[in-house]
Each structure stands twice: as C-alpha cells, then as structure tokens.
Image (cartoon, rainbow, N blue to C red; front, top):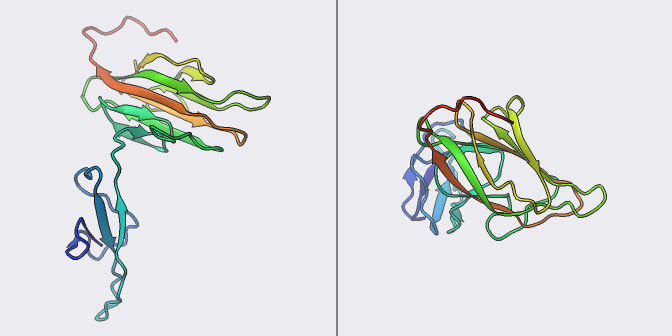
Length: 193
C-alpha cells in the first residue's frame, strides 16, 4: 500500500499485508487531496495498478456513524453533516468517550430537527449514559424539534452513546451539538434518571 499527497511520489506505508484497511498514524489535513495505490505481490511480476485519490473537506465536525471517538471539543452532527439532511433507513450507534482522563462528556444541542411529522413517521435519537448501548441507562429519547438541551455523562467511563434510527418516509436537518468535557469537583451522591 502506497499513500501520500503527491501522486508521483507515494510512500510505501504497508508491505506484505493482508489487511483490508489502512489508518494513517496522524490525522489527515483538511482540504487536502490524498493519493493511494495498492500493488499486489505476484512474485517477480508487478502489475500496473492505478492511483486513486480522495480529498478531505473543511467540515471539521464529528459525524454520526457506527463507531466511536474520543473528544472534549468540536461539534457533533447527524449523518448529514453540517449542511445536509440525514438519510432514510439509518440505524447508527455512536459513542463519544472523553479525551481527557477522569472527565465526563457533555453535549449542548444548539440545533435539533428530527422528523416526526406524519402518521407512522418517526425518526428518533436515543441517548445512553456510558458506552454500553444495550445496558446503559437511557437518558432520553428525542424526536421532532424539542431539543435534548444539555446532556452530561455520569457513567464511570465518562461516555455518552447515541442510537439514531430513521424510517423510510422522510428526513430532516438533524442536529448540531457542541462537545465539551467536565471534571467533577466532587462525586455526586446519586444519579437520578
């Protein structure tokens, strides 16, 4: 696998690998075109393989998808990103872990519009305390234009998990939420759900 920003001078980044993915060791730069090439090893003969490319964008937000991220800053968007609508028939699970040890993720929703306008039409954002999507405490279930407001994790791992599911009928602009982390000065006596 060859990778780089100059199509004529790619750098070998993985040799004799059977992996189907490659992750660079450092974050990619915004608004930059990257080139990659995979050359299979056929002994002494090397086939002529094309060079492919992709370009990163200036959208720096964290986008709802299946997966997780460590963050204590940034903006969390639905799968449509900053300027687009989310899609139909989505079922996504995303966890935000604090990037600062001992802290707790906090999200402040600044925009919220999740479609619920028709009979049997219901898109929903479920927010779970912690990283256990199936066993964590449900903080709330949100649809329509009633914003979740400000949500702070109280889980031992400091994480918040988001389950987002949409139907096939309609979509909307989704959400934007500012991410931060808080460090408690003292442990809470109890948590009320």
